[in-house]
Image (tube, rainbow, N blue to C red):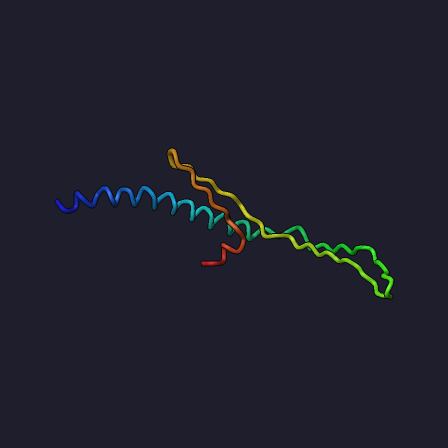
Amino acid sequence: MNVLYQLPVWLLFFAVALPLTFIAWSSRHAAYALSAEPIDEAKTIYEGPSTYNDDGTRTQTITVQIPKGQSVTITQTFGPIAITANGRTWAAYSV
């Protein structure tokens, strides 16, 4: 009889835990696939014009742009609930 009182709690737990497990598994595999792809963008350097100041010094602005990490968005729908996760390249090696 005691098991019947616990049954709704376990059903609710599995109703939440299973979709989260599926989305975590899909996100991890997408992160592995994303980390296997090479990053085509290299860092770029922009050198601004040199400006000579009145006190004899020179000023120049140098901007370095480094591409950010890549990510994949995964959305899994379970009935009226949709769960979205972002798979990133560093997440493939975090566990």
